Image (cartoon, protein in one colour):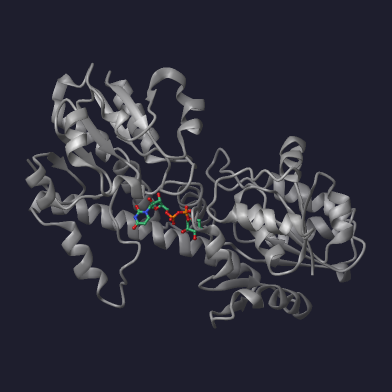
Length: 437
Ligand code: UDX
């Protein structure tokens, strides 16, 4: 099929590349001419595992192209995916300027039957607004609007796209349903479902799924904090709970709160939608409040440990990205940790395998960026771990102790076995498991 993807952010680029991989003819459109030029020259603008291989192959074979010219992409396409940013506006609701702007442009451009797909996470009712914008200069027989929310996790987005747990399609048109079924069938050969539903339910599904996952995280963070108070070990509690098949083992890890480009924004947007409908969604308010507090948990622990003496201390920081296998620092707990440490007069020596350049842009020389994880420890009074990169999981504890001034670790991701830390002689404070010394 002939596809256009408008917006080459991380969702658009993964979508376009993966559809090319199953043999479709894909043109990706972006207004950023410099970025388009780079992509034409084979440069992948984001770090996402496996994307480079698929990108190179499909570009070489002529199935993946890039342009700034929306009209030529529209002329080419039978299906147009809108993968545009929906940043939170001043009032917390998703800002639809980009999506509705492009819908308006499309209205004057489409000249044959086209399925226009909302891929971005958009509030319930957006597809109807896209429909209205398209219908301004366009006969309704020439298009259908479909909602097809993405469930891609950064760091495994390609895998999530190629092997989805499910595909959700919201449409009221049989013709569009057939087009979407043909597009997605190659990805669900294993038998996972393509779930068709009405448009509003599809839009709601995305928010419900992400908000539920965020709720699980905030819930576990509160359980962990309470475990510290009552002397329980949240790791054991998590396993005990997660073995109940109604609960499930995944997504129960307490830590320094959720971050990234989706959860914070989506929970806020759903709460806002509730508010606009005069519905007081109490759980969501608590989920957000708990997360605001939890992302400062490590800084709180450090401040409590040093009391008034944090000024002038040097803290090594392992991990800056909001989670491993990405360079994304949007809403990263590390940034909140850094701000608190700097405000208290501490020095920060940071290391992250991928995200340091992005953090440099924000902090310049206010913190020291180190070449590797051990270099970050040199002369530091303590280590704080904020992101669970695999390389941090089995470090050389002896080498760590040589580099650190004091054997003190604050671990926001529960990476190490408690007994191991006792044997190694660390002061070790993690999340929901008590302190070992
Ligand atoms: C998420 C959703 O998973 C994806 O389906 C959606 O479309 C986009 O948002 P992503 O933001 O890439 O994906 O990250 P994810 O792996 O889901 O983690 C989100 C946050 O939750 C991270 O900050 C992570 O550290 C945190 N988390 C996750 C926990 O604190 N504990 C867990 O058990 C799982």
